[in-house]
Length: 113
Image (cartoon, rainbow, N blue to C red; front, side, top):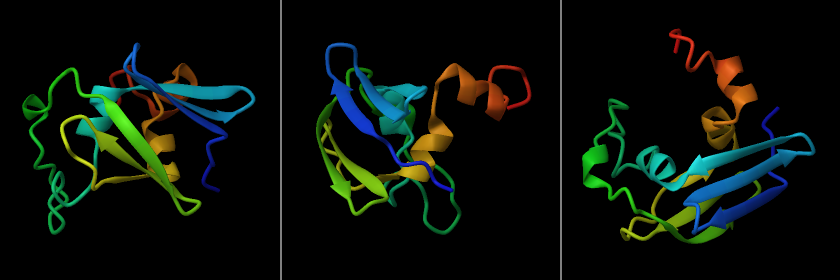
């Protein structure tokens, strides 16, 4: 079952999107990492699935300028670099969750990722 965020807060001072997934689970997503992870057709080739966005082309200071909920399944983020076409589904954001619990579960950081 796909988790549904209980809270989304863009902290521009810390350059983080905090997503509260539940009472004991939240993740702090760096703006830059989220921008580079965009899965829209301008960032990922629709036919091959190969990422075409060069992370070096994204400013390390990229920031969230706005967010809109899309149905009950995603959020659209407007970025300071003008990009606003990507949808971040709850499932995708849950898979990207950088909290220690999710990082352990995914095997990230242990040499197996």
